[in-house]
Structures are given as structure tokens and as C-alpha cells.
Image (cartoon, rainbow, N blue to C red; front, side, top):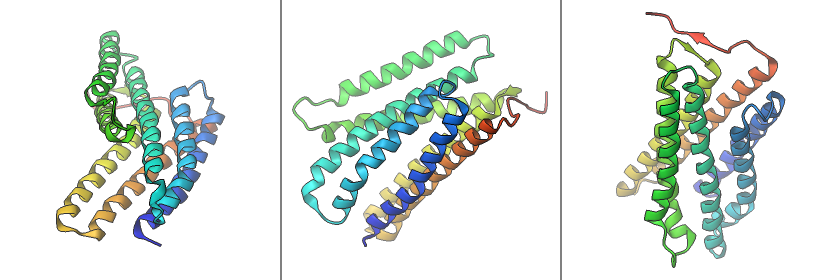
Length: 239
């Protein structure tokens, strides 16, 4: 078995059960409480399940499915990253629920996120090019925007005296995923000039582990909420 296939199989063994656990916990909490998060978890689970046989075939050396493999990955990433951006926007909306300037902040965030998606799509779209040739650059921009907004939401929550601890865990968990993906990509880019296969795959492993940590944090957060544990707000010490 190749390194790439082994890492991919390991990621499936980690991610898919954790996604199922998250979805199960969300169902116990109530879908209406976190509709976009539920949609994100279901879409990413179904996308991963659809990609599994194609990915397995491609990573085993069957290059005939290469174009289809890239298309499925691109469509899955596009759907998941748009949903991630929407989820992060809801984090900011909830984080600013008690602030006086919440209308201004919400309008700015929603308008900014919408413009990011539309402008990036207009910049990268190529009518005569296949989806896989331009969509990854668009989803990269959307993903970067979501990471910045998640960091902003987390910073707002940390600065608040009276903050919702569940929301802090959700934004922090997603922040771990963003950070892991960024560091993993940096490690892989460092490995390419040196042609170091171990370092290159170390970047992949880091991404797998941080994504698993993100899903575990979300699962525990929803699981505790489903159990009715009181963690609605945390008051910061100090002034």
C-alpha cells in the first residue's frame, strides 16, 4: 500500500466515525439549534462517502478515473467551504448578540462574505476551462476568508466578560482545523524543493490529525449539550 493511500485510509477511519458521532449528537441537541452546522456535517459526510470508492481506485494507481476524481473532489470542496463560511458567519452573529453595534457588524460580515464569494468566483471563473482548473482557486479564497472570520469570532468571544462557552469551543475547534490545514500545506510546500517524501506526507498527517481533533471537540461539545450540562456562559475574571 502506498503512503498516500495509507494516509487516506487512516483519515477515513478517523473522520467518518467522528462525523457520524457529531451528526448523532446534533440530532439529540436539535437540528433547529444548529441548522447550518448540521447541513455542513451531513454534506461533508455524504461527500466523503461518495469520494471513497473513487479515491481508493485512483490512489491505487488507476489513472483512468483521475479526471472524475478531481471533479468529485472539487465539487465536494466547493460545497463544504461555502457551508463553512456560512457557519462562521453565524458564529459572529451569535458572538455579537449582546453588543450594541451588532447590526453594523452583522451587516458588514454578511456583505463581506457574500462579496468574497462573488468577486472571487468572477476573478477565477473560466467559461472554457474544466471545473477543476479554476474552482480550487475560488474555494481557496473562500476557505481563507472563513479562517479569518473564525479567528475574529474567537477573538470577540475571548474578549467578552460574559461569553457562551459552547460557542468558544465551536470556534476554537474550527480554528484548530484551519491552523492544521495551513501548517500542513506549508510543510508540504517546504518538502517539494527538497524532494523529501517523509516531510511531504508529514504535512498530510498533520492535517488528518488536526481535522480529527476539530471533529472530536465538536462531538464532545454537542454531546455535553445533549446531556444538558450547564455551560451556557462563562464570565471572564478581571476588570
